[in-house]
Structure formats: structure tokens, C-alpha cells
Length: 284
Image 1 (spheres, rainbow, N blue to C red):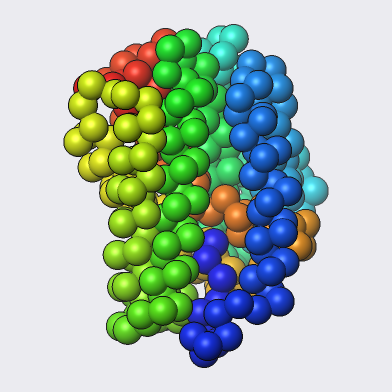
Image 2 (cartoon, rainbow, N blue to C red):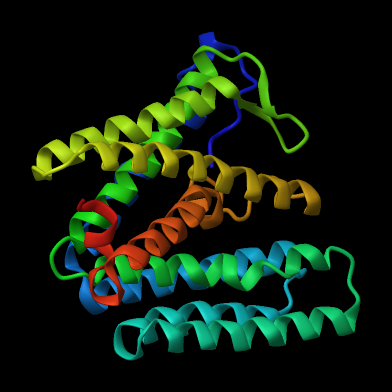
């Protein structure tokens, strides 16, 4: 999620930004190494992140309910570990069962905010499933995940830079007062530039679809950011957690990736099928 942009542009370099950069310099190489390793190491990394996401979401939306945490974590971790062994259908069945149990619990308790609670399990479980589906493709899996990460990170970074330096009309002031239309333009530019660089490096036969995909995923990255901002505003929290210095929680860091990864995997699956999700996504 992009940081606050309500400070003067002259204070662009701040202590908060320095802490964020330092944390990123530690976390990005770890993430890239995990993606490169693939196989069970990537699954375990995604499962661990999903468990933290489940804890943060349940602490925010379900007021720390242990029952809901178990359901959310079980859905996310099981889907990650099942999809490469038993297929997408089985993984989705596990998610559906946990989701139904979560919904029944919420309906019976009649808690306010239940509408947000309805979306917790797919919100937490589907991104991990999507990333595993993309990464397991034998030919382009590694490239496709790296491209997705590059698009999301570039979109997030340039949205921040454009928003700070240009400002202008607000994108969704009732949800995130600091987001601007200039930031959205920066995000799209970041997604396209990252796609151009990755496509050139990989020598793909056709780069235009990748550029379009980068722009679309950049918009979804911003929507994911807004979704989490709306949830935090609804439940009165500033950050989803404190595990990452300068960034808040894991959800604060991956909120843009959530929508983008699910959309990317769904599109790749529609074009390439279960065994070639990455190829369906990046090869035209």
C-alpha cells in the first residue's frame, strides 16, 4: 500500500521513507530468492505469508477470533499445498468449505461489519493459489511471477512518486484521501515500463500484449490498495500490523498484489490451462 502523501513535497526524503527503503532492501532479495527456488520452497514461503495475512485480517475484521483465524489460515495454506498435487478444483473446494463455515459463523453471530467478513477467505486464500499456479508452469513460470512482481512494485512506486510530486484531484477521497489521479497515471506508467523492460530482457515474440497487461494489472494493483484502505477505514485501524518496519503489516505491503495476482492467474488459466498458466499469461 502506498504511504501517506499529505506532507509537503520538500520533505520527500524523510526518516519514514528511509526506514521503508531499508526494509525493502532486505525483503525484496528474500522474496526474489524464494521465487527463484520455486517448488516446495516457494509453496512454504507463500503459506507462511498467507498465515500472517490471515492473522492480520482476522485481528482487524473479526476482532481476533481464533475460530476465524483457523478457517482463514487453513483455506489459504491448504490451497497452496494442494493445487500442485491435486489440481485447482480440489484447492477451490477446500477454500469453498472454509468460506461457507466462516459465513455461517458470521450469520449466526450477527456481527456488524459482517459484509466485510464475507470476503475474508477468498481475499486471503486466492492470491497464494494464483501465485502457485503461475510459478508451477515449467517454461515461463519463473519469468511470469517476476514480471508480475515487477509490475506491482513499479506501479506502487511510481504511484507514490507521481502523487507526491504532482498531486492534484483525489482519486477516492472518502476511502484514501491521499490517493490522486496523478498517482493512478504513475501506476499505469510503472506497469507499462516494467513490462517493456521484462519483455525486452526475455526476448518475447510479441511485447504489446505484455504492455497492455502491465497497464491493466497496475490499475488492479491500485484497486487492491483501495480495497484494503476501505477495510482499514471501516474498522478504524491505521495499519494491518507492525511486522514490517516502515510498511506496517504484510497486508499493507501485498494489498496491490492480491487483486493483480488473482486476475493474472485467471487470465493465464483461461488461455493456457492448468499446466501452462504462465505461458497463457505472457506468451502470445
